[in-house]
Image (cartoon, rainbow over all chains, first blue to last red):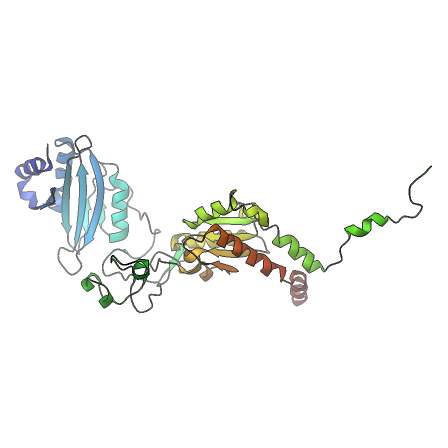
Length: 202
Length: 173
């Protein structure tokens, strides 16, 4: 079974839940409604043979609505067939059903998405932060979170301060230049193509 | 015939006595027997391991006894990126080390946060604990660590521990 055939079978069965499809360099992706994700994922695993959840990632389309997107990468171990599921979530209610009961590996992936982006997973057995400490007040991979961080303090656990950015974001330059050019340093947004990759501090 | 000397003085002892100040003797002993607390947090720890293995052999400078208990160590070598999540644990280990104690910030991250100008990384371990020697490099080569260790030994040789103790004692009285 190819990923296109899998996508076609999903479209016939879950037609109303699928709002669109993407096709990029032979990779097939389906945009799925949040409330149908659990049923659709269960069908993928049990009927279509997607026995491996490769990754869960998330995207912040800051300024757009729906703001968040959760991306599931599914795979069939035997044939290597790949399928991508995308779920759009609104800023007001960034909640989606957990898939830990289908693929146990989703446990830590979902905890990371929760930690970094603040998206909650309903039915997750243990939705704690995984990288930052419990009680850290922010979700640092959101686009409206500044690169240098925000001050916070939890006595006896941890604290944070803003990193000195010397007048610009402290970033590498993705150019073919040598390490002198590429190495991380304070750069103003205009110094780096493309300039729209930088979100001004709120 | 009895060959022992009739007086209670052994002339052989003369070559075995050195006159010095207590401070100098103590500093000499301390600086040549530094027991490191290897606070290995990132890739610098790999260079720290290299420094203690055969090719570079940190034991030439008397600092080969890496102690994984803070209560038995003299010098904390902070080798690697100190995240905020880890920082208070490092501080706590430092607090458990008995005096006198010293700290080496090994590499760019431990010295200044290095390339991690980020929400997650402490911008230098000197925000939390006093640092005696900073070593540049990302990561520094073992030779650089050995050089830093020799700098620390030189610093220890210049300390006035007994005088300081007396002064502190006098202040309490």
